[in-house]
Amino acid sequence: MDFLADISIWMLVGLFVLGTATFTLSTISGGGGAMMQIPILNFLIGTSQTAPVINLGAFLSRPARIALFWKHIHWTVFWYYVPAAMVGAFLASWLFSEVKIYWIQIIVGLFLISTLFQYRFGKKAHSFTMKMWYFIPLGLLISIVGTFTGGMGPILNPFLMNLDINKEALVGTKAAQSFFLGLSQVSGYAFFGLLNPELWSYGIALGLGASLGNYFGKRILSKMSNATFRKWVIALMVVSGVFLLLKTLLGQ
Image (tube, rainbow, N blue to C red; front, side, top):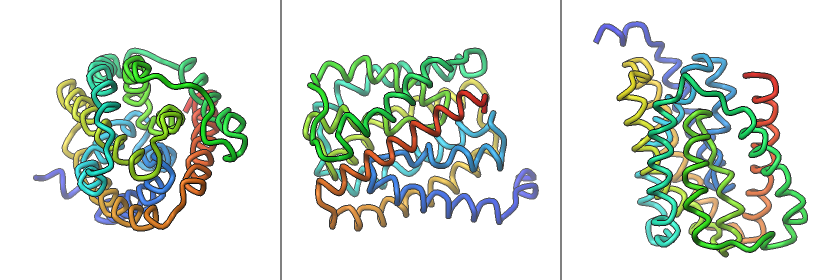
């Protein structure tokens, strides 16, 4: 337990508050809590350690979100998405320090920004025709990129919204999908030695705060209309896309 002496209590408190704030916002905007944490954790603990800590914290918060949104989960989407996502996450954990995926991140960033125009600034409810089988390749791609970067939640939103999955159903379905994706990610990080006791403590603090944020976010979400929720989702996707582009192009 000697490692605990080297960990600042204020760092743990700060990570708890960060988890609460980002996951409150992510609940009302359809995800992206992990992506919001990336620049702050890059500064606090370094870019090489950010993705494992963020994915651990998000994973630990998901049981609370699943419990809160259980009755809204769309299980058909879940079963199309999760098997491929788990394979992709474990594969990415194995390749974590060996492979760079700049061009994929640029494409994803541009796609997220384009949703502002696809949905005509939130006035349209749909932007393209969506088929259920699309979630198989999406699961593989999103899990690989998310395992490398630490957060890719917003990319799923347009695909779910084009199946008329909104608000509580969107948040709950993504939480269920992400839990098993996170299980594969964290197992991969642990197996390949990417999580030490210090990073575990950071991830736990982040996850406990995020669990509380899920509760606050659900209370706010229950009072929002579908149109307002869609605007929040689009705004978050655009911000996430800009951030991902800057992060990739600047080599962060």
